[in-house]
Length: 452
Image 1: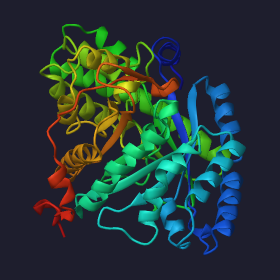
Image 2 (image 1 turned 180 degrees about the vertical axis):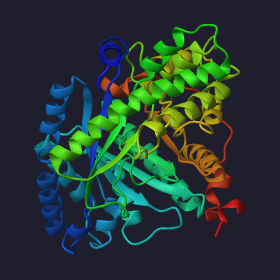
Image 3 (image 1 turned 180 degrees about the horizontal axis):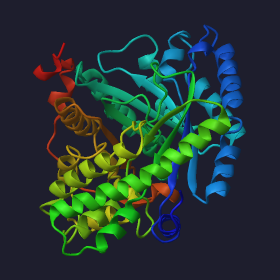
């Protein structure tokens, strides 16, 4: 039976506390589109995407009207394109990117993710060609997102791929320097990538997933912060309980939207990703939650402990609200997309090293961080390797999304607009790790990966 108080509470969350469904993401398998002729393969890809997703945006808008719940983005994720490119040796993978863009335009979605390769144990046919094509692919498209998985707890870290990705990130930023290096903002490097992630830029439809499914990514940092403001003198235990109860309410909304979208679209309901995904909007910040817990500013001593408690409580509350929790699920800390993180970075309180420590206990990793434009590819690779090591050893997903600000230096700013926000150029260490990166090879998997 509907409770009037709960209905009014949800309305308040939406109107005053920035509660929304961040994304409904349709995952589509393209394995049946593989062809040795790239043009035939592209035709099959376009036809399948527009057939499966033709109603994705209208259904999202219908659900918004039915429930009064904002759905900010409608997105598509597809099979890692490197798997299709493997059947077309010697042909340009960018043709797939152009096809994905054409499909995105037809369907009216915000993003398509899956211009991706999985190379955590080595390069197979098609992988290297696709990776080397990423800078051009992201330069000639607007709505395509790319990801590369370079390591896992089970396989270790492919350092040849790490070295290559340092070059690719830098080149991608250079190719889109006239657009505030936006290409690099749509490229993420993973360790332990998951197959059912609805959030960009890292979404792809894993080969173990069904032919087509619908995922939901919820948000709600503003709701959590608002709940904590009502208990200024609560103990840590009490704060954790408040966060769990709030996360439960947020996730129930995601479950409702996912089930309804599944019914209307006629495809299976995949997962609810219950991550707290911030935006640049005031009142929608993960950093402000941490400050509500008692930090003067995010990034000061105690930040990692606060984030660890937040992430754990969000997971515990969300899991109780849905039997289909998946994706990344926890708390995101993208610097340029979080008003509190931006303030802390500008003030010099939040450093790259502190962010790295925080990634050991949060959902993803070093996300949407702007670095000086003269950063070397080897330094980018070293940052990727550090973050991948945290993921590998701790059996968790970690990622790096760095944006080299071409032509800019520490203290200046890149402006992306929309959900991507703006990012201050953060300082990096000047000492070189080039000799380490150039050794190549593979960092072996940790001992605790031998679980069979």
